[in-house]
Amino acid sequence: MVTLLSDEFGLIKAFVRRAKSYKNQNLSSTSLFVYGEFKLYKGKDAYVIDNASPIEVFFDLRSDIERLSLAQYFAQLIYYLGQEEQPSHEMLRLVLNALHLVCRGSKSLKLIKAAYEMRLLCLGGYMPNILACYRCGAFESDRMYFDVQEGCIYCKDCFRNNAITAPLGVITAIRYICLTEDVSKVFSFKLSDDNITVLCDICEKYLLSRVEGRLTTLEFYKGLTNNE
Image (cartoon, rainbow, N blue to C red; front, top):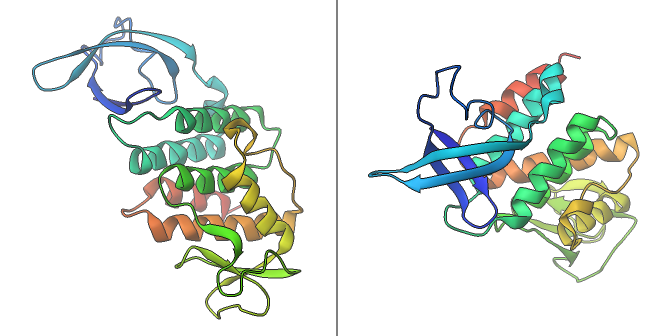
């Protein structure tokens, strides 16, 4: 059984016949992280993959355990936040762009992770209220606060004790991630290392407050990075 993220029909669970046979012509196309074309037919109880051809296999992910574990985390989030029988064009583009950047190694993995988490939450129906301070309506102040539980922001005069302190640059980045129309540009911003750390803290905590279930891939990824 494999789970596919498709452009028009969202998540699709399908069987791969003779999946354990090395002679199976669909073996490489139905491996993890493969982007390809799939022909399916509806069996008695489930879809069956009749034929598949790979377009991109993201082979470079296998050369680095940290990048591979991050990609596995991305895939698990799709499983939790994707929907069956719903168009998922932007979600598919988001994960493809994220995997491409992880393979290239041209951007910080922390930045990719944070931007992916926040935009995926938006696509899954959990967009935070980041347009203005939730209490007074102020658009910005030099220091702002992100409330993970309420999914909103506060200015420096209206903050709550349990909200995360965020420089204005971090809030600007979150607004960009959530609101940019072209999903391929979600990762096209820069922050200082300190601000990336704040952004990562906000995005991960906000995601964990909204996603039910144990994210074992996140635990594994953090186990790797925390030991560096």
